[in-house]
Image (cartoon, rainbow over all chains, first blue to last red):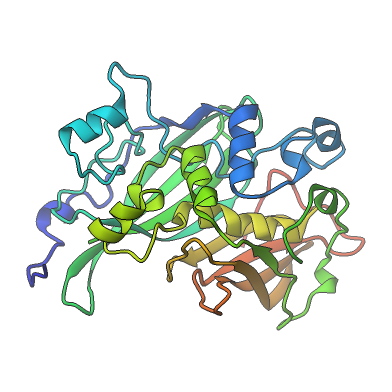
Length: 184
Length: 168
């Protein structure tokens, strides 16, 4: 269904610039097992990620993790009720993404819109330091911009850009990710 | 370059600033063909339960998609990994930017590529600006973007780690 009404309402504009709390990110503590699963899933056999003896000979001096490992993803927090069961009990046709209770989303407020479908639009990433095993990662996010576009079919959509800084427990900046998504 | 092995990455020789020139195509990196299992493995690793990535009926009949989709977040880690490998062992993958333009579905084979658009030296470090992308077997560009990698100069200073960008 298409509509000519703008989706960039005053309520949506009001969340531009909203900033989250400084929060623990993704996995919390970077650990060997999660690192194994992550690097296998990106098909990267780099021994810097798993061979401690070799890693000692590199410029890093220890096993490192890809920048986005550890702080990416949607790890659910511990909670009383299984979040997946709860999601589908409340909405049998849930998309599994937005409605999952307890899912970490960087602590930003929801976008007040009736647009329900979300697709990843792109990223700008700056890298500074690799996380390492045992690091505890933190992030802070901001709605950097929200703009409106009208598709060929006349449907309005929002393009939401979130800027997130990621640090380790020593306050060292690991990376900055500016991620954009379509909400349509 | 096809899919790399641990030994290739362990023994990779350094590419220096002087080794690249404007217009040069850098070694490519081929992944695939992608399967539903690859896609599911990524979703499980990062706990992304978005059904368009593993529930084919939902993807096609509810969302109107051609199949389950390879995750944008997966590409978000693939492109930095590709540029990281080009810089090994002592260069630095500083910036990468890309758009998710075309859908990637099971059956696709992907080629990551990078072309040098300019190069310059700042504070003794060699900066290489790149046009980048990820094409399917049908030559469809799924992920056009740009990147900046930092390579050492022959006989020059080491690239600092953690990376410290130039002041201007």
